[in-house]
Image 1: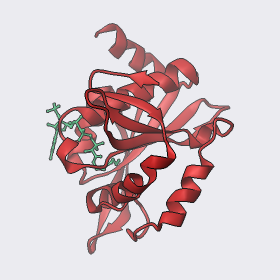
Image 2 (image 1 turned 45 degrees about the horizontal axis):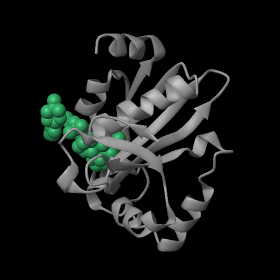
Image 3 (image 1 turned 90 degrees about the horizontal axis):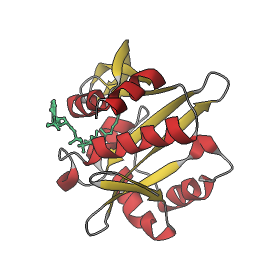
Length: 182
Ligand SMILES: CC(C)(COP(=O)(O)OP(=O)(O)OC[C@H]1O[C@@H](n2cnc3c(N)ncnc32)[C@H](O)[C@@H]1OP(=O)(O)O)[C@@H](O)C(=O)NCCC(=O)NCCS
C-alpha cells in the first residue's frame, strides 16, 4: 500500500466492483478515458477485468485510489502497457466521483503511481495520452512533472467532431529532480 498526502493506492477488492462499474460508466470518465465508442460496460466485463489483475502480469497492475481520512474508494489508476526492454510504462487514471475531482486527489494519486513505477519497477520513462479538451487532466499531469511531447492530430472522434490526442511523458531524471525539489 502506498500513501500520499490525500490518498493511498491499494489493491482492488471484489467489493469495489459495483462502484468500479459505476465509475467506469460515469459519462465524465468515459468521455475522457475511452478512445473507442463510449458504450457502458456490463458487470460481467468488469468482473473479467478484475480477474485479469495479477501480480504475475505487471502490465495489468491496477490500483484502487482510496481517501486517507475516512477511507473511501474514489477512483483507480495503473499501467496499461509495460515495455521492459526500453523501460517505458504507459499509465491511466480516473477519479470516479465528481465530488472528489479538482481537489488534488488525482495529482496525489499520480505522484504515488510514479513513485511505484520508478522506485519499484525501475522504469526509465512514464508516458500517457490525454485528449486535448481535458485541460484539468493536463494541468494535473504537468503538476506531477509530465511534459507535452507531441500531438496526434484528429485521432479522436467525440461528440460529433475530431479532437487531437496529446502525448505526455516524464523521464526518471526529471522525476528525480521534482523529488529533490520537494
Ligand atoms: C484527470 C483527473 C484524474 C485529475 O484529478 P483531479 O483530482 O481532478 O485533479 P487535481 O485536483 O489533482 O488537479 C487538477 C488541476 O487542474 C486545475 N483545473 C481544474 N479544471 C481546470 C480547467 N478546466 N482548466 C485548467 N486547469 C484546471 C485545478 O485547479 C488543479 O490545479 P491546482 O491544484 O493548481 O489548482 C480527474 O479530474 C478525472 O478523473 N477526470 C475524469 C477522467 C479523466 O479525465 N481521466 C484522465 C484521462 S487522460
